[in-house]
Image (cartoon, rainbow, N blue to C red; front, side):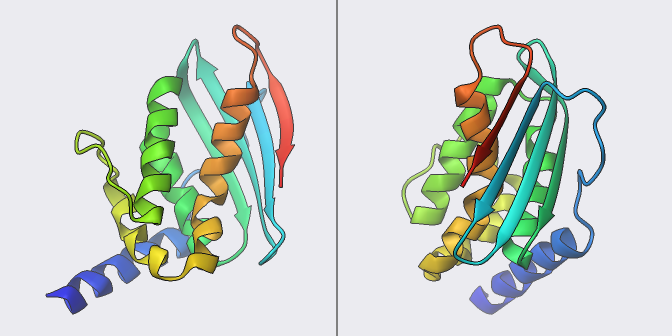
Length: 154
């Protein structure tokens, strides 16, 4: 059964890698952030359009390995329509998942469960977290009530 689950997770990862969601232009985003993983060369740009404190739309443009691209694609599917507080909670859960820590059972990670196996390869954890770190860093740097933030994470 474990082999079947591993195969399913590989299929999910490859689907998100080959057909990344959220790879588009957003006019006048409220949040823009760029991130880099200097170890493997992954680069990402996240743009978010907000409706008050809710993610109305999100774009993730990632150039990098399959894990990094797939994780960014999964992020897009998961956070659209969520409040910024929910996005931060999910981000913490993803980090815990990848580190093998307990995660709150009421958080639905959807396809992100497919990243569970990445923790077996510590050097790849940064790849899986790049999109999340880039987004969460921008959200946390955003002053309360601010319209726009542009920053860079490395």
